[in-house]
Amino acid sequence: MSALQSKHHYGEGEARAVCDKVQAKLLKECHDPAKMCITDLRISHWEEAIQETIGGEANRDLAAECYYLWKTTRLQHLTLAEDTRAMLTELRKGLRLLLLTNGERQTQREKIEACACQPFFDAIVVGGEQKEEKPAPSIFHYCCDLLGVQPAECVMVGDSLDTDIQGGLNAGLKATVWLNKAMTAPVDITPVPHYIISSVLDLPAVLAHWSVKTEQNHTIVLI
Image (tube, rainbow, N blue to C red; front, top):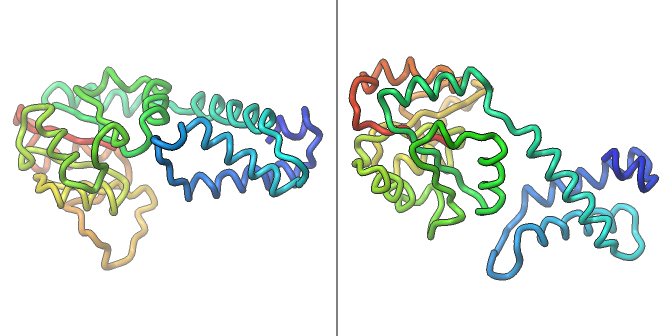
């Protein structure tokens, strides 16, 4: 937003409107890698948002400038908190951990690289690199095969009821843990997770409750 204001002399309201339109487009984004790479698609989001707000001819160069600045800033703010790093390090002493995330391959790999989380997991699986994403059982079974374990030996931890919890249930995993940071939910939530936590740091206590911490063949799948 600041680049639009300082370098291209957009008003604050105009710059904010452009950014809001881009955010709305990202939320509705449907990407087909066979037709367009993710970079071109997201530059197009900015190009359309600028044209919708300001009018006039399309400005691909300005759109590209905005996109790369937005992307760089976003990645710079992706970090793995120290207490989370410590928790993962401790859990890996007795468990195998796998990071499973939906999303386009390039985008998700850049996020993973930016937050430097690779050392804390035994494997990382990106949905955009597989035939199906969460909540399809196939991607969960692929993760199990990757680590040489059975679904009934795995726990799924995630913040999405629709993809993480439903996917874990579809795949027949041992248990599902819903990370609900707001801790506000309808009385009758669906699907129903086995356990609900408000912070990922509560996870060790949940695992201890299930006595999985002492069993070497259990896996935690994290989003």
